[in-house]
Image (cartoon, rainbow, N blue to C red; front, side, top):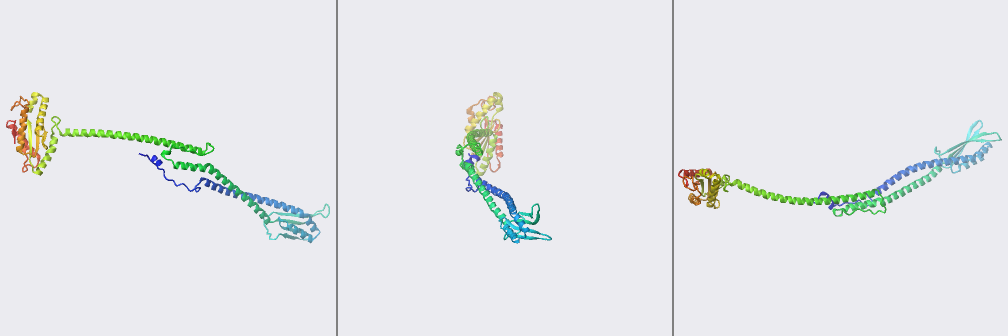
Length: 451
C-alpha cells in the first residue's frame, strides 16, 4: 500500500520546462541591467550635456573676449580717425571669426544720436542662449587723455555652439551605451556560468527523482566550493532526499508491521468468531434442550408443534401426540432423594429416545416428570403400538420404586390423542385432548395407555 507521498515520488508528474532563455533569470537580470543602463545613460548624458553646454558657453565667451581684445584698439583708432572703410573692414573681419555670429558697433557722435554699424554671418538669428560681450571703446589721442568713442557688442554664433554640443552629446551617449551593453553582457555571462547552469542541473535532478533514486546525492560541478547560496541549496536538497528516504523506509516498515498485525488480528477474529459460533450453537442447543435429559425442552416443542400441525392440516396426514408421566415420582424423590430422581428421569428419557428415533418424531420434557411425544404421519393405532412398546421397555428396565402403588418398579402413564381436522383448528386442542387422556390413564390405575 503506497502513501500519497510515495505515490507522488514514484510517479513524478511530467513537467514542461520553459523554453530556453524565455523565462531565464539571467535574461531578466540583463533586461533589468539594460533598463537601468538606459535610464542611467539618459541621466548621465543629460548631466554631461549640461556640463558640455556650460563649457562651450565659457569657451565661446573666452573666444569673444579674445576677439574683443584683438579688435578693440584698431576699431577705436578707426572711429577716432573717422576712417569708414577701415571701420567696415574691421567689423567684417570680426564677423568672419567662427565663434562670432554678429558684431554691433555704436559710434558716439557729438550732439547727435550714436551711429550703429552691424555685421553678421549669413543666416544668423538673434538668440538669448549665446554669450554676448559688450565693451566701451576708448581712444587716447595723447598720453594722459582718454575718450569714449563707441561701444562694441560681440554675440556668439548659436549654430557653432550647437554643432560643438551635438558632437559631444553623440560621444557621451555612445560611450554610455557601450558601457551599459558591456556591463549587461558581463553580468549575464557571470550569472549564467555561476548560477543558471547549476540551477538547471538542480531542476533536472529533481525531475528525475524517484523513491529508487533518493540515495543519489546532488553534486554540483563547481571548481570552488564556497559557503554561498548554491552550496546551501545543494546541502538542503541532499538533506531533504535523506529525510524522504528515511521516512519512506520507515513507512514501508510500518506498513509491513501493520500488515502482519492485520493478518494476526484477522486470525484472532476468525478464532474468536469460530468460538463465538460454537458458543452460540451450544447456547442455541441449550436454549432448546433440557439440560438434565438432553431432550427438547418446552420452548423447542412449542416451535415444532405448530409447524407439524400446519403440515398435517395442509397435507391431510395423521398427527398423534403422546403425553407421558412417571407414576408416583414425588414419592420416588422422597424415598431415594433428588439425585436418584434425576437419574430416574434420565433413564426414562433414554427409553423415550430409543423408542421414538424415527425422522420427524420429537420427544420433549415439558414438565418435571412429564414428557410429550410428537408423532407426525402416525395414526392412533400406530401410536398406541409404539406407546405399548415404551411401557414394556420401562418394565424391562426394572427401575426399583418401593413406594409405587401399582408396581415395585418405575412405570409410565400415557395419554394418546390424534389430530381430527373436523374438530381441531389449532394444536392446543390436540394437546389438551392428549392431556385429558393422560388424566384418564392416571385415574384408571396408572401404568397404562388411554385415548
